[in-house]
Length: 102
Image (cartoon, rainbow, N blue to C red):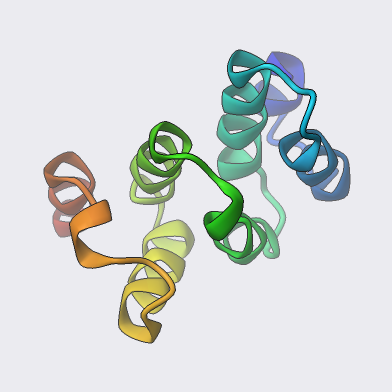
């Protein structure tokens, strides 16, 4: 997962598969979330937000933090909040501060 993240892999379907596997450890799931958020694929932010309902609180916090670090991710996160898919209180202060600087 780390290699995919560092390469900015566009293999988003593989990462989504790892994230959605019920038997995957939380540590591996978090690595896959981080790799998907770092992906160079235009689809990655939307796909990551599509997984939001299936993520636990820790994975949601990680997702918000990672998405807020890039312009496309921040736009997708804001769209999720506006649509009601993401509750405002689930976007932490750190994520809001990152989006403010973009």
